[in-house]
Length: 237
Image (tube, rainbow, N blue to C red; front, side, top):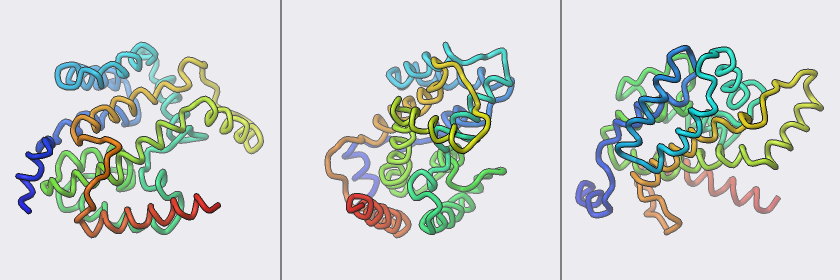
């Protein structure tokens, strides 16, 4: 089957370069971070108006003039004693060997398009988004989003729910002497960036509850198969 005709028939976008810009939302903040967020917000207002709404809320809460506080909020969300993590493979598989397989395959794709992962691993969300912007294999791009990145982002968003946050707080109090304290209205600040990404994915990849086509990439087939096994095991538990 002709991939281009298939994608046109389903009305997928063929250009994913905007994910290179959106990746800036998930980089560790510095003094120029608010300006990068505003650039993303401006792009989304023109191209994905619904996706820009969460970022408007994000900017209202972001302490733009205080780099230390921005970094603390990022750390509280994604790093030390974190609400969630930006490492997609860890979100899906934890420390299981299956994450290692995912990292290996992702690294091959990064190398093919010369996408520099810097000091982070191959499954770090900003790295994967920048890979998505550079992939020449559009079929792989579609499958990667539908089967790997989008499910992980959904799980990340779920970790910001009030009940999950409260459970994590109780766990931290038991295991750590100190807990990074943040104001209640900023505790879920970064969920807005994930919600914006979620909205763009839904628009670009026609993500609905309908049954999706089976993956064709061996790399994606392997990951999907492992995820099904994992879900079945969890259901039984």
